[in-house]
Length: 77
Image 1 (cartoon, rainbow, N blue to C red):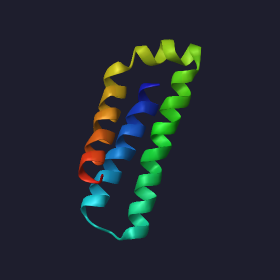
Image 2: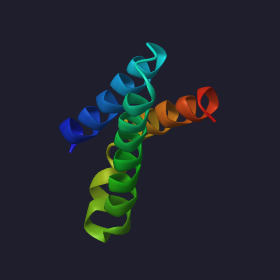
Image 3: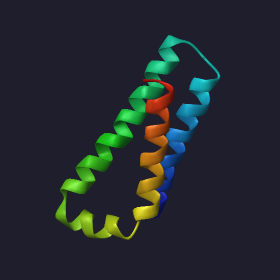
Image 4: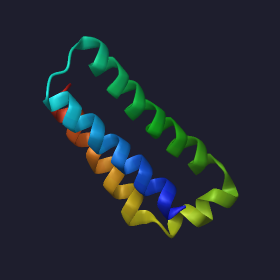
């Protein structure tokens, strides 16, 4: 689970870095789709009772992902 969450966090970080480089509208759409996908997966995982217990052990990783998403929301409202 830790690896999956770290990979999700890395995907968000890569998205924010590529958005900062201004690689065009299509690229921005791809990055936002990636961020939306990560958020959707986290919500789905949270809805599963068994995964909720496991996820509670990785609160720091999940909080880190949420902070990265919030950062993008502030920069690209």
